[in-house]
Image (cartoon, rainbow, N blue to C red; front, side, top):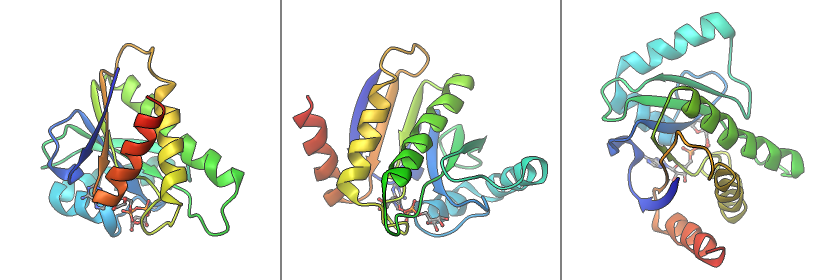
Length: 172
Ligand code: AR6
């Protein structure tokens, strides 16, 4: 499994699955969630509404999978990151769960290429360095599985790219 780092808009990527930093309602919002629903069209919202009707809202740290609608990706994996507020170990665990549960859904759905945004580091205000460390460490634990061939960390800003680059290269 390769780990790649890019600076890009995640909605433009032709990968098997992109991950959305959603909220528990699954009904959309702003940030990357807004961009995914806007560019992916109504099919994504319809699929989210079906999930809500059958299993209710999505708890923090959990993930669900839908079509990617009009996007070039095949699937969107929606995960709900923690709101940082006062922070703490519990928040770190919840962010870790976002990456783990997204990877598990990807594996179940035979996804070969998956792209992650910097979950929780926008509106939810998780510290960027800590979030990047958790993201990279958690994903590295999947090195030996044989379904996913490539994980792409998608940084929207140069600042985020620089943070990931530093962490990836410090840890080789
Ligand atoms: N492609 C890649 N990354 C992006 C894009 C994009 N098109 N747009 C923004 N980002 P945020 P959160 C980055 O706020 O903190 C929503 O309203 C952005 O620079 O989107 O998990 C949801 O509905 C940042 O690095 O998500 C929730 O209510 C990262 O995506 C809430 O925001 C995450 O920022 C979730 O907040």
